[in-house]
Every structure is written in C-alpha cells, then in structure tokens.
Image (cartoon, rainbow, N blue to C red; front, side):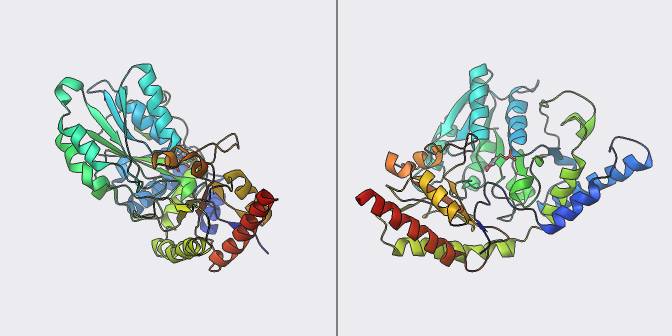
Length: 386
Ligand code: PLP
C-alpha cells in the first residue's frame, strides 16, 4: 500500500502544475537584465506577483518575494524596530507564534532595541483578547513608543484560527502596527490581505503545495521598514539579491492552484479521525483547540503514556507520516510551547501528535490512520503492562 503523508503543516508535496511551472522557469535569465532573456524572466516574476495579488486579494506593489516564512517574519520584526522614522519600541507577540517569530522577538529584546511582551492564550488556543484589550487600553504610545502586535492567522500545531478582528480596532486606535503570520492559513482558509488590514503578512511557498525556500511578504502601501539585507536594487530595495525565479514561478503556480473547496472537504475527514480517537477509549485523550475554529486539515491530540517519538516512529513503520506537536530541526522532540501554553501537563506535552491532511489525502484516510494508530497504541500499552 502506498504511503500516507499526513504532515502537510510541515511541508506540502508539490502539485503537478507547480512542478511544471518550475521546470519551465529553469532556463530563464536574470530578471534585472535588460536583454530579451532578462525580460522574459522579469515577465515571469511579475506574472507570479499578479497571481499572488489575486489569490490573496492584495495590491501587487505591496508583494515582496522572500526566501520563505522565516525571512518574512525576520524582515517584518527587525525591519520595524530598525527603521529610522518611528521605530517600534514594543512587540506584543502571542505565546503560540511559530519559533521563527518568537525567537526573532527574543533576539530583538536581547538587542535592547525593543521590549517584548507575550500575549497569553486561553485554554481554547485563542489569544486572550481580554488581556490584550486591557493592556492596550492603558498603552500610552506617546510615552512608551510605537508598538507592533504579532498574531498568527492560524496555528501550525493545532490549526486554531486567531480572533484578529476582535483586537484589530484597538490596535489601530492606539496607533499600533499589526503583523500577521499567515503561513499556515494560506491555502487553507480564504485570505484577503485588503480585508485583513494587517500592515505586514507572511506567506510561505512550501505550505501551499509550492516549493521550499520561497515566500512572500505583503505590506500595506507606503509602509516603510529597514530591509534585512543590503545589496542591489531588487524588489525596490526591500529584498535585495537576485530573485529565486524558479521558486517564485513555483509559488505563483501554487497560489493559482489553491483550492479552498477541496481544503474544506478535508474537515469531515479530520473530524472522522477525531471521532474515532474519542470512541477508542484512550485514557486522558486531549484534542487541542477542539473548542475553537480550526483549519480544516489539522488535528492535534495527546495520548498520555504514548510518547510522541514512539507514535511518530510506529506510524512511520506503518507507512504513515505524521509529526510530534512541532518538528525540531535536530529531529529530537521537545515539549511544544504551543500545547504548554494551552495548559498541557508534562505527560500530555510529551505525547502530542499532529496529523495534518492536504490536497493528496485519500478519502479512506480516517480508516487507515485509526487502524494503524490503534494497533500501535495497543502494542505500546501491552509493552508497558508486561
Ligand atoms: N510560520 C508558521 C506558522 C509556520 O508553520 C512556519 C513553518 O513551519 C513558518 C512560519 C516558517 O516558514 P518557512 O519554513 O517558510 O521559513
């Protein structure tokens, strides 16, 4: 039987149309060259920008190509605290942001350029809007300096959709800036950059069935930030270096191929897995984010006593790719800061599994997943009892 890839939140397999676009772009020239070869590359690049603008309802002039989510986040945060005029002096960042954002904010705080404050989350996995509203009500931007709020659109581990609209009016009323990491929401939920009204938004190619190492930064018209890199004049000096033409063409094709209906249809399949787990009588089962609106493809649960590492290995042997709450670059699993922020105790934190479906997930996914997982669970319990 073919393998079952249920780790789409880590990375998505390329759609065939994306591969085709990338192969076609391989021979293109340098988009900065004025000759015909260069002009062809420029045309392909601008076509991809237009496609992204349509897919995410944004002005193409505010779309900057980057190397992915991490670079966009770093450019956004460092770019706002380092800019000459009105540099940001305080970062409010949610407790469940991706490490790319949290570690960037920590580095900024350590540099002394801005203070950092963590926005707590409630047990549902959503940011504590009361906390933020209360904190901002008493924020005096004139005395304390310009501030930026960083809240992701949807979480990578549990899929929880953040209630950005609930806090946006107050952020703007207080003169703050809003950065939205939409890396996991893109391709899974409808996104309009115009309606979101964020100052900056991040999207990554490899989470929307596009290539790794490419992404986009969406900025409001006229927003000024200090670029991360110095070099030539590419991307209007906002992101210099010869553009990753192949990646950008792949990103454009991936944006064009976004199919939100197919994504929504994954919801019942995810729910069937969830229902199967609930019916299995697992001691201490916790489904993270179950009370909140979630991306339709994501399920995150803990089965105390059955460690994430063993689960991932057992499922891999059964031909199914899943991940622990969050994958660490070292390959080692550590307790995820996300479930910990939701109140997970140690036993729960170290037994978390993330199952993320995607465009190539078959209809019988719940049956296949549940059979393999329950077998592994029973084996592990027998081993413990012996
Ligand atoms: N933000 C979120 C929510 C993510 O899930 C990820 C990747 O897992 C990133 C940012 C980083 O994106 P990239 O892998 O493109 O650097």
